[in-house]
Length: 432
Image (cartoon, rainbow, N blue to C red; front, side):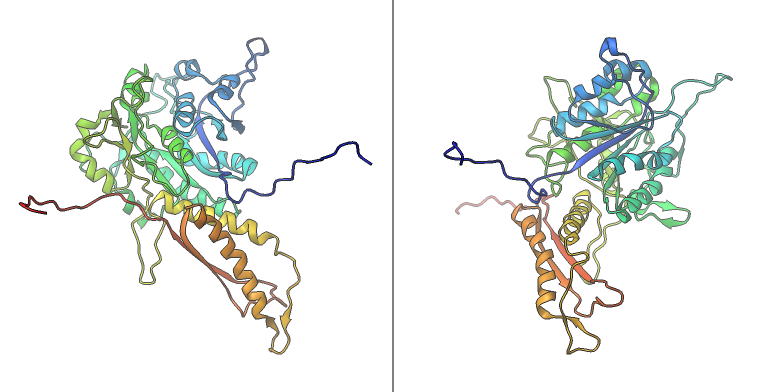
């Protein structure tokens, strides 16, 4: 017998099916920070993942504004900008690597961070080259351009795509976002990321986006010359985190990058350290070629990302299939995969009744409809949350559940649409 008249206990919460469980990551060059208990500094080891929820978590590690300035890097900058746009509480993983590590080699160092989390949906690659000189007084790093792009950026593109494919193969689909530092000063011959050539073949970089925009005033105040050609990849990543994954990072209603009281993006530019006004005549070319940068709209104060381009041409085939040419389409595929995998995991190793009147025995119509319902329920939840427009599951009735023991299922998902341009006609009339 209990003396409590009413006993209400907290129920157990299952897997997150309606909310947003995404986590994010940044890998960047930097230096280690020694532990200093007296100063409350936990310290940072290189090549080690750290989990943050707010800028102060980075500060406890010893990563702050002084860290950036003293070491001539932009790491705290990216973290702080991520949380300025994405809001505190979001999980951001960081890994710091030696300044000798080039962007094309960063994916190998990022794998441990992805395995540690398994929930990372987007990862930013920030490049902080070594500003020092060697024993011969030669610079440790100099920007070099070839075929209309900084070679450090161009060389990394295929490696980031391979990394994303590795993550996908291991059930951790994600999108990569590269800091496109030091773009050429002359834009006329700039590389076309939607037709980027790698060893004579076109890169199919559906899982790679390149950010070349910068807060020009912030960059101009940096005391090291290489820093003036950085790009604000952390700001872009924060915009991704701030919204549903199917939304445009340049959404005019909510994603204004400018904050006048804080002094953020009051003057925008791109990573050749030229201002928006100086680059105005080239913005259409940059947009057509798949670069991500800040832009303005007449009648509004501030600036916004132009879009969420990926390093791949825009494809629509005869069957109505689209490729992932925008980051929100990449997210639609990745998040659908994640949700469907969770839903179907409970079906693995389960017994399935077969129709013994067929030779060989095949699954019954009821079993096939059941498996269809498992996938369709996932799509229905996503549709109810306005993440997709529709989705459909089709189970192959000829799936071999006796020898191969393999269920063959196909999925189709229709993403939400996007208003990137409004075309209208206006006339003067003498009567309506």
